[in-house]
Length: 110
Image (tube, rainbow, N blue to C red; front, side, top):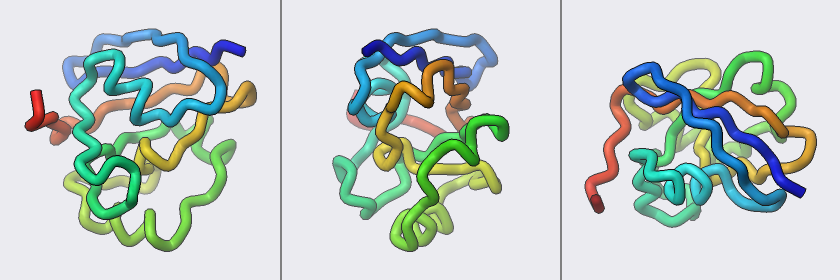
């Protein structure tokens, strides 16, 4: 099944992306050319895939593990609705999820 993810870029424009269930939000964002580096490749050893989840979607996600919360403490411009995109697996229930790319996000590998 296809899941729509609505990314708001740093400049305020919205990019609607179709993804497959089971994909990580980080992979979807990277494939769409968004500036999420994901340096640790999902091992929760960095916060370079940090995103803001729209408040109406935040409580629909699995709660973050302690390791994710520790990494979010290191994320630049973290907020109460911050998550690591590598830890969000897309499901049918998340169809239409709204994600904002933080203003501090840069992909140094590009």
